Image 1 (cartoon, helix red, strand yellow):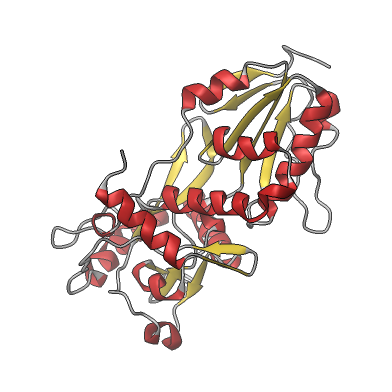
Image 2 (cartoon, helix red, strand yellow):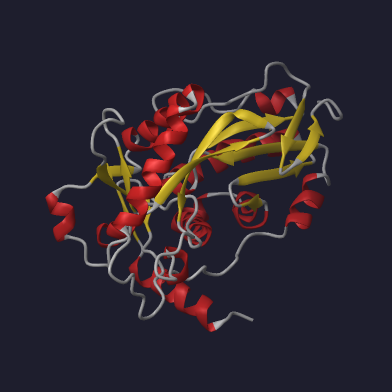
Amino acid sequence: MISPDDLAAMEIVQKKTYFSDGHFVVPLPWRKGADTGPGNYELVRRRLESLKYRLIRNDSLRERYIRDIEDIISKGYAELVLEVHSRLDYRPRWYLSHYPVTNPKKPEKLRTVLDCAAKHNGVSLNDLLYQGVDTTANLVGILLRFRRESIAVSADIEEMFMQVKVPDFDRGALRFLWWPDNMSKEPSEYQMTSHPFGATSSPFCANFALVKTLQMSSDQYDIFVRNAVQDNFYVDDCLVSFPLVERAQSFVKQINELLSRGGFRLKKWVSNSEMVASVFPRMSGGLSTVDRPPGYGVTQRTLGLECDTKVVKD
């Protein structure tokens, strides 16, 4: 049974979502009467200074974090706040602290997280947003279906949340501070143009855009491809299996084309079949790349599990 909050969130995104420049634009699902209060700039400014001292003491972390922030900005996931943006700021303004997160199993990988749960005067941004309906497919069901047939295929959506844009009037609530040149200068204001990792509503909004992508052109693709979008994705991870190589090859071609229509790009393709791997998309004029493992027949991690790609062959 869907709760009143979930219904309210769904009503907001259904009414205000639109497609522009190759991506879906999905609004933040604000709770009724949401109010950020007098503003939290000073709190976020102090936390930025704490981050600054942490980065100064760690050269490696500093270089990687600067690189990641610059990557977010250069890809258009965030923009410098200009005077015109302030005039478009219809929503209450909110500033977000940010910090680096690393995975112990992948220490070389770093992710910038916006702290949407930090409270100011007892309220956080996440408190003001609906979480939305959890439409994620059942994990156990995904894993069971993945092991059902002999030919396995997996991939994940690159930077899934970032491919879903935020409308102009909501971006003022996703502001953060950063130094465009060096840390000795005053920080500048930026704002996210995409749904950030850390917002309670981002998984819901991203999945809504994924479903809209399917609805936009579903009749042009085979039923097993359409079903995979609904039943075989766990957030951004796709795991499917097929009894025949030909069916798996057809899936790879169709799912890549389908998702690209909504601005989503699949990467890290892996299969236990060389024949299937031969049709993995490669970089060519903006097409997806295949991030194949160094050598066929190796152990790969997916959804926290290790899969031996040598178990079943063509």
